Length: 129
Ligand code: THU
Image 1 (cartoon, rainbow, N blue to C red):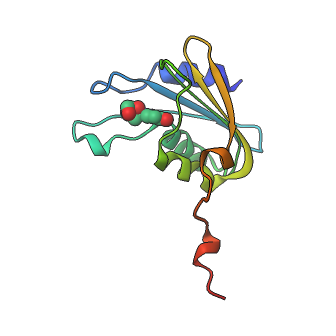
Image 2: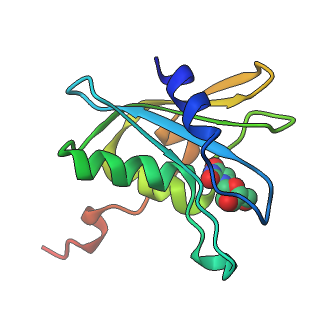
């Protein structure tokens, strides 16, 4: 399940600068589960988030859609995806897709993609015809 997959991959996060390890797991409509963790860099802006890693793994595996996604961190409250990751998730997920935010001590919060990113920028905004 996604919680187990995200919990396991979180342990492999590379976060020597923030010491804040994050794991993400998503399920594609194919049923395949793809995981990612944050990978930091000494040049701080070059670090990547767990959600971005899971999405990259999904695309590399040949899947192109998110049916469900879960994120976990050792956070006082369920960890919310950053703004950039909200847009990245919205690229591959319908508005009603479930996003579960978790803490390592068992708290969780369920949201939808629409909850996370109201007013999302889409390809339709570039349509002039
Ligand atoms: N981070 C994630 O990987 N996902 C989130 O949803 C929030 C933040 C990472 C980025 C950075 O490596 C560390 O957490 C602290 O911001």
